[in-house]
Image (cartoon, rainbow, N blue to C red; front, side, top):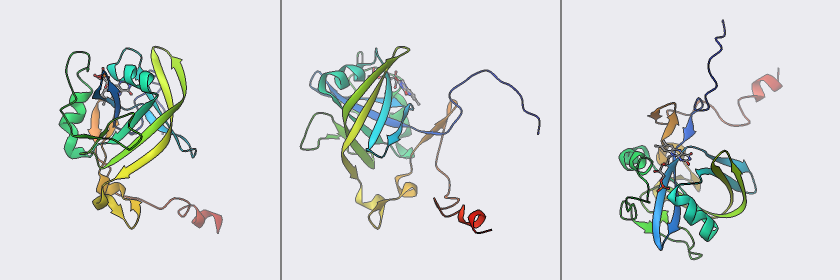
Length: 185
Ligand SMILES: Cc1cc2nc3c(=O)[nH]c(=O)nc-3n(C[C@H](O)[C@H](O)[C@H](O)COP(=O)(O)O)c2cc1C
């Protein structure tokens, strides 16, 4: 197969689209982000937020942020949160918010899975603040569990790639099992 060299463009892998939450001026605010991921089993997440975002102010002030995983049926609100800023539009009433006993950052009741993260390190880069957050609490809708494990197909997250949203599709194999076939050859 011939390879074609194309322009450098970071939006080429499917990424989970999440809503980052922070308390700003005493109100919940949420921003849609794709620059989110697992750093290590610490357990540490990272989110990368433009330094001018309203949410960024709240994360810096409180030292906490939330990560909320919206299911695909929340696509309109998810996209909306990524199109308007809390600087000009009050997004606090878009969802019903709840808090862990620690308080610090609001989480979205309508999202099937939520994480409260405590900022442990911040790296400013190219006009963004990359916040590394230790997960201090995790919540999941009971009906999204299979046994006691969160079930991706029940959570039904939204993936982004390029300028389109996608759903998850089906599982195609089990981690640390599929490769066993080659090991045993
Ligand atoms: C699908 C999608 C992904 C986005 N990913 C990011 C991101 O990773 N980091 C970021 O700073 N902004 C991202 N944005 C833009 C912010 O969500 C958007 O500017 C939002 O209005 C910021 O809200 P705030 O000012 O209330 O914090 C994304 C927007 C969309 C629609």
